[in-house]
Image (cartoon, helix red, strand yellow):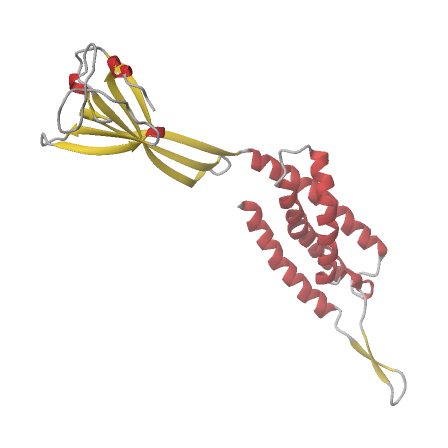
Length: 271
């Protein structure tokens, strides 16, 4: 963020520099005879010494803040690549940025070739310097994924996939339905697991959950079967250790169902 603030300051300075340059190089009227006049635009080399120094310094600041940061921010997106690889990636953007900057600031008005050499050298140094700073800044930004358990809930089971789990002991045979009878058949876990449980009011409640979010843990014979519902919360966030600022990128919540059942339920084929 700090780099974009500096870049914005550079934009303001660039506007000021352009205005000062336009004013300093305002065309003058020259007489070439009684009836012949023409407008002539002076060059920077024709200005007073202090004006030339000020304009050069302002252009240097514009190149460093606007051009240097713009190219370095692009190159900084590949901070995990080798430094020489980043430089190669930045050659074309640097060339285009300098050309655009030259047109905006009218650098062609600087008629001394030494000025252009200085501008290019400062531009290259600025890119290297800002790239190093931005790389260090980006490496200090971390993507963190945190997963916590928000709550857990237990439900006493009556039936699991139409099997009355409270009655499963020893050898099991016969037929079964939710309305009564002995136990038989198979447990269908292809996509959903159905179960009945006892709520806080003592009533039998039906529910169904995805098989992909469920698992079975076996309990000893005689223990009370139940389902444990674990509610998870996952937060993916971006932590900027440079400023200790955290921003949440993605949030997700889901339930995991753990069915605590007697091992004798494995006598059924799980289709």
